[in-house]
Length: 187
Image (tube, rainbow, N blue to C red):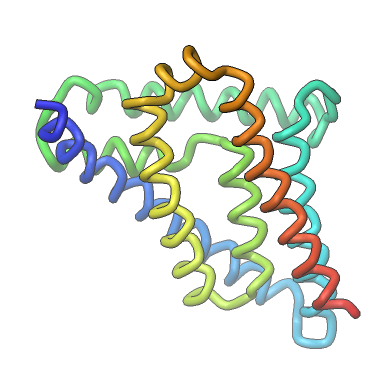
C-alpha cells in the first residue's frame, strides 16, 4: 500500500519539476537579457553569492536576518495564500492529471531553497543550462520530500539533534560551494 502511495506522488513531483524548469529558464533568459557579456561573469558571481547567502540564512534562522523588506514578505505570504486557494480543489482528487496540476501550482510556493536554486540558475544566463539545473534540483528534492514524508517524522522524533545537525551541514556545504564557484568566476 505504501508503495502505491509513493507511485501516486510521481505526477505531483513531475508537476513541481515542470514549474522549476520553466522558472529557471525564464530567470536565465532575464539575466541574459539584463547582463550582457562584459559584466556577465561578475553578475553571475553576484547572483551565486546571493544564492549562497540564502542557503546560509536558511541554516541560521536564529539570527533573524531579514532577507527582504516586510512589505515584500507580506506580498509573498499573500501569493502563497492565493496559490493555496488555487490548489485546494486538486488535493482530494486521485486523478493523475489533478496530481500533476497540483505539483505545477505548488511549485510556485515561495521557498528559500527554491530561491537559492533559481538565483544560481539565473546566473548562467543560459536558458537550457538553467532548465537542466532546475530539473536536477527538482529531481534532487524528490527523495528528500519522500524521506521527509515517510521517515522524517520518525527520524526527527528519534534523533532530533542529529537530524538537525545533518540538515544544517548539507546547507552550509551548499553555501560554501556556491561561494567558491562565485569567487572562481571573479578571480
